[in-house]
Image 1 (cartoon, rainbow over the protein chains, first blue to last red):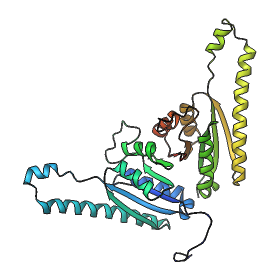
Image 2: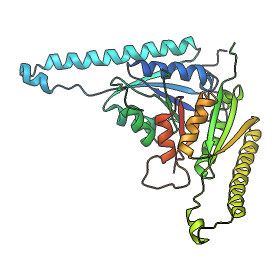
Image 3: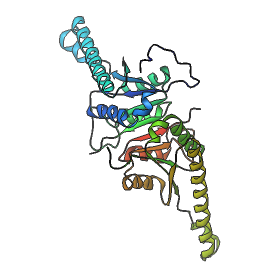
Image 4: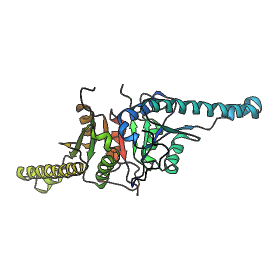
Length: 163
Length: 156
């Protein structure tokens, strides 16, 4: 089915689905679950994989080394590279399921960045994991997922990892 | 090949948010739902009979109470029928279930009991406060339920 270059004139706009991930296992699990369970829907939609990079905490760096500009730049670059690696790995997982995804990364506070991206990219469905890096076993729902369910303008699907 | 078909459950009440959630799911997740079992669930809240007892001097007629319960059940079954019709329009046969009790707890219980793989909810219910980001039942279910939850928001 090689119809990538062809503009199909349909009355329905393609659904845009965004999966927001981080490097935690919950993010990976959310992506795989979505591909497996909603595969038939996603195949007809545009899939965007999004990861947010929290701004680098350079406060202590300034204090420790009187602010080396190159070191700060290096740290930012390595964060960006880590994010792009994460996106590439995620895109590879999507190709395993026969789905091409677009990868997007931005700098900012994850919860706010995700909700802003939903608006900017006109997303119809946001998929998030239930927890992230700081997965405290006591919490029912991670802080970013919780924020997104409450504030995102589109429907939000929270994928939980069964124990 | 999987032994049992995957189950998707949509929990509704009479609010427009639920109806919107069901329609959104039928429209946007059509292909994914078509090869799974769809379950539509509504909860009849336990009626508050306290003022009824008070107004009838502590001797509320049992027929009246039974009447109220029957009425609630009728409303729920009616709601479920409307929902089933909506699903049929999209070519999907749904199973309907109703129970009496506290919505938040019952939804979570039924999800576990019926081994639901995806729960779909509206963002608000009857008591839709403009200030609240998320209704109390949706909020509780997103946090406590063991399966993935899809909260459908109605964009203003």
